[in-house]
Length: 276
Image 1 (cartoon, rainbow, N blue to C red):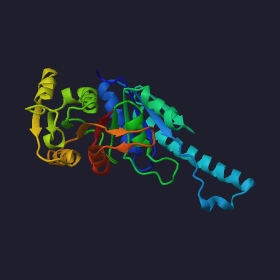
Image 2 (image 1 turned 120 degrees about the vertical axis):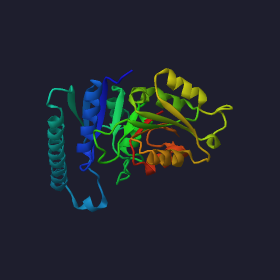
Image 3 (image 1 turned 60 degrees about the vertical axis):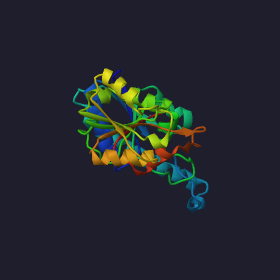
Image 4 (image 1 turned 30 degrees about the horizontal axis):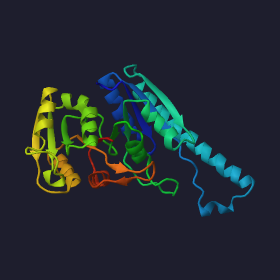
């Protein structure tokens, strides 16, 4: 089923324009409602702020609020310039003082979430970045977009990672709108990384995709480093989308990543559709 609502999370100054442009192009392509959620960063109280007392604390807070308002205003103007042609149904949201489950609701009320690279937060407030929170805790398919990725490059050459897991099956189901429209789809299996795929690893999933009209090529790749192999195949085929399951356990902000997920999140330079 084609997504009917997409949420794009906005944080970083230098990547938000390209991320919003990509989200707007995807929403226009699918006729989907587009939601931009600007996540206002809370002020971080570092030891260097220790001089602030009394009125100094209030001055520090006012300065921070003013900076947030200015940044949000500029981001909103850029978003409206992308969507004011009337071809995309859209809305703007400001997320202030939201964290954990409250923040995840923005993604849970949409069919697809789009986030930026999972940069490690500078402060100790959370162990995971916003992008990692959305991927692992929202329960929704999440598209991880590299900085500066062009809005006209989406889902023409697709790599799909398959290992027979629930997460991988969810990822393929969520990616179906991309897969049926793609020019080429390579289903990549790394038999050495798991041993539960039968005598012909990937053959059943290839047939399943073909029944949906997907032009699929099955690749059985030797090795055990599934994450590294997926990235290598994506680069060698000049893919513009990688589809895979996201593996992690424990509660929000305390995830232990699976090996393939950890490799891909650290080294990816291609859009990745992840599902748990």
